[in-house]
Length: 472
Length: 166
Image (cartoon, rainbow over all chains, first blue to last red; front, side, top):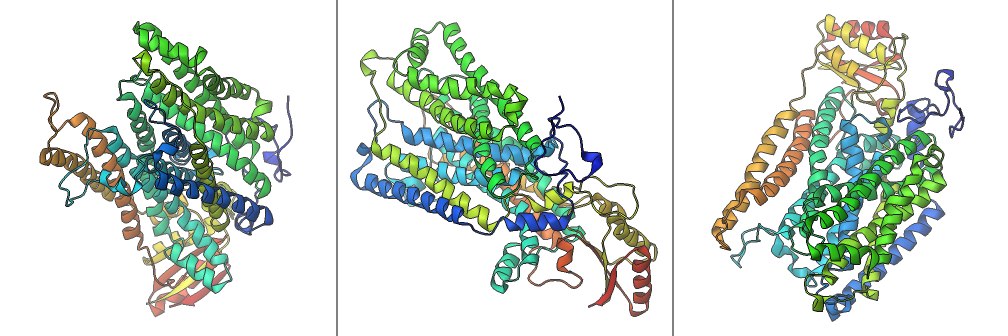
């Protein structure tokens, strides 16, 4: 059945086609470069709604920061730890935010190498999300150690203590993996921004802002030589980022898999964590990009075809995650290990049934709706689903962390765990911190990549021998 | 040296101008384009960017350093547990890999900056803000005698505006 619901009027008869779901990158309502510059630069003007959202984010962040100071003063006893459950909301939230940070690099780097065109309009948003999510994640191990001023002990450098980190500890692996990921994803984001900042510089009339943008763009002037080296560097950065994405969450999974707790000590953890991270990140991309395309009037850039393609990726990763959940149960049953079997029974039908079922319903059952093309192209549904995915993926980490520690080998050690108000405040504060940075970003720098969108728009030609696609 | 700056609205007009100028043995040509286009690389016949060498060397140095720091620290402060090796290459591959990506990625960006002569402290001759928006620009340098011929070539190729720049 042919449906015609492109968000903007189709201007070219050749592009007037049935609304076939595809990942193609044609933007029929975008006519020329001047329109791209004008419309995307136009999103930078602040609005009352933006100020309101920023105000809420800052308040949440300040609340979280205040509670952290309270915890530093009174000690970690204010967190809801109940021995032997000495990992709780902070580690759960750390893994949650690292996971969110994975979709950005997947969309910007891996899909770039695979030439998946639908990434072009959403990747900048996802990349910025990655940087801010990793910044948020990085705070939680520091919060968790209770004495944050001793964090630098994890960094290997010549010191008066004459001691070095334990390089066989997964916690030191984390430090290297997360810091590398933060550095490379920030670099990747900034390199991609340079030509766009130059475009803003050339449009800017305020001399002070123009000067700032000139510095930020490093004097970029769009010469053939600059583009030649830029495209090659971008390709290599993408090639480096691709295995990095896979390695970072694998390393995070080692925090668990290297320990001998029931439910943790399993070789499926690295791929399971990576798939979960990508799934949760795509969920957050929907949470962010759908309001942006609506409030910034970018529906003719981030088209339904792009959302449809991203939704298929979401469905695929949901099924991989669902398969991993089932595989965990199978491994426990097949192992013949009574402790493992008992642990998994307790997870789904015992003490933690409610958390496990939130996880299963949000991450496996609800995303099955994306088999419907109609729902994949329904932005209200996608947005609502993305909130459930965020919830489900936070609970996935809860289900990984808490049930294992509260139901270990010795029955006399079995206990209960409930987050305290301090835990919840820091969790809420982390959302404030993340959205504060993200909201500041979207009003200072283009949320859609100007130069890459221009590559999609066919250039003006004197002769009709057509040129499609740039050099990216 | 003096030069002429031509503004082109069409991509093929700009690339035609480059080919024609090169046939006239004008070699000091810079093209400005709002997006990267293969057509310019073809017109110039430029070789592959040397950025890849920076990537390779940076990556190799990073991997070496990553393994070295872990092995050296373990040797300097040995933790002997259960007869297991003091320096174990399997977990240390994580450091080798992560530092390879870190240094390799940063050297790639350094290679891009060094080869593209970025950052630039002042705007160079021949640049016009229109080249970031929708027009293509060609800036060709030549002797006083060649300038007239450069201008004619650009206009023949389809330049909408040609002006002297120095």
